[in-house]
Image (cartoon, rainbow, N blue to C red; front, side):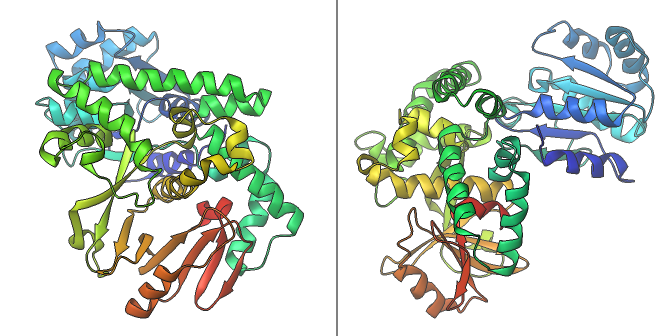
Length: 431
């Protein structure tokens, strides 16, 4: 399946400043598949090493982590000669071998002609919890996220529709109504299926929502297992409690994260490590409130006020036990959850496009869902789950900060009015 990360890999391969590449991301987002597909397409051969399925690999790195020592042994293990610039070396589940990660420093300094990509599902967690000698400044780092809406549509054979959507986004002209309706159906399907490659592949081949839900439940179970396997004993329960509660908080009118909703009397000091673990593992992301709309936005974030969104829409639907029909037909029973669902979806798309997201709140409670830096401009984004797009808070923001323009995401077709770029939810990937 088409993944945008391939374009990044190609640039990395051809760069004169290339360093060993670390690809991080949550479990099941397609790291291994993407790397191997790239390797088979753009290299003469691939030498693949998995530290989870082959624990004895660790012994190789205990003797020495010099490239001169490692390359002949790795060639022997792989059953092929590792050739500079022609072989892609892949270390998978590298979080299980600290010295393999440290060896990247010496590949960068002493053997830069060897092309290496390493992948790790819980790399952020491992590095923060263990005393890893991380090769700071000696590696390139990239995060892979679940498939976004564009990749999802392409996987379902909708390349032509994707191109039309991109054109309409650029020109602010409405998509023909039949295509708009078709794209909205695809958007609702994406809310059910999400972007985990295995789920998307199953759906593209079978259109079976029940089969996909079974796969999603399996992935959720693997996340819970990770919380036990890669966590401090006294943090396991708190991490699971926090994860379970995130989807509950998305159903609230005010989606700002509240510790007291995890547990009566709950405080930051009790749950902040659990939240940090979930963020580092790539399972969730945190969006901070900004106190002032100035560059750089990071300088004005309020560390005590944030929202938490999950990284995949399909897993969110599975966790909430929402049936496919509930979402496909947006039934009234999920009215309380529709806003949080749409916000979570938009955050997923923006993060996949490389944005760091924030939200804004006035002293009187007006709130704008997202503020991003786009083309060097600070742009507010208002999200509505339906086509009722009255946005008083956005008006307050625009009157206060006079942005170049604002973006309104909803079920409405493309357009531009009163300084607001109207964008249908399915086209969020164009931002």
